[in-house]
Image 1 (tube, rainbow, N blue to C red):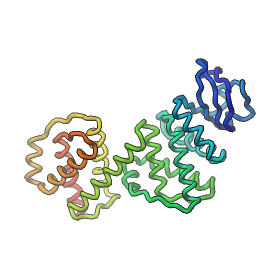
Image 2: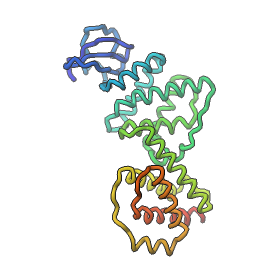
Image 3: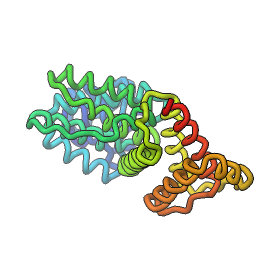
Image 4: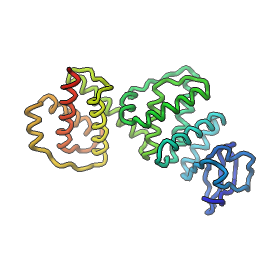
Length: 282
């Protein structure tokens, strides 16, 4: 993309519809990119610090619709935020983050103004699973609160973290939320079955949650694992409570993901549960 982007329509100071060298319509987003531009002008990539390009027709349509009910100040703020997120991660952000995060933050601001507070039941799990995304999400919410002079609830940090993770991994926010909800269910089952109140700051809790996350990803992708029959037999005899609980958790994962779970997962899960049971009960 050099000097062949020709302006077709200026949506606002920061968003312009252009045609590329193949005469295909795309949306270009950049700070001040549309200022003083008119139809027929060309856009050069050295005019702005950073260009975001929406090529997918469906993404373009959704983004244009969003701009019709979001004021330009808020839209510009969110574009600055996405630029900040991109700078904090080496990964190239999926273009869908412009639609998803713009929609989410704009709706969150509207909910706040209407006095509505939506609780986030997966805040702790989200912070544990995606620590860097969570840190950047904290920065995002701090900027939104300061710039718009509001105070979004803490739960919004978790929601924004999921959108960031989706943007850098190309995973859908829906799937990420489902997995977080599943982990929350598994943790609650673990607490009830072992009769303990888990310290969410403990290293064993962090290890268990991260293990569950990787297990869910492995199961979802259908990865094979080498059987651990001898070790399974030992664990079943030595730690029957944790071994049986491991299989209960596996059945829940199997039903939720609609995928078969390798028997070896029970071995690794039992060891995490035993460690948690031993140290969090002391």
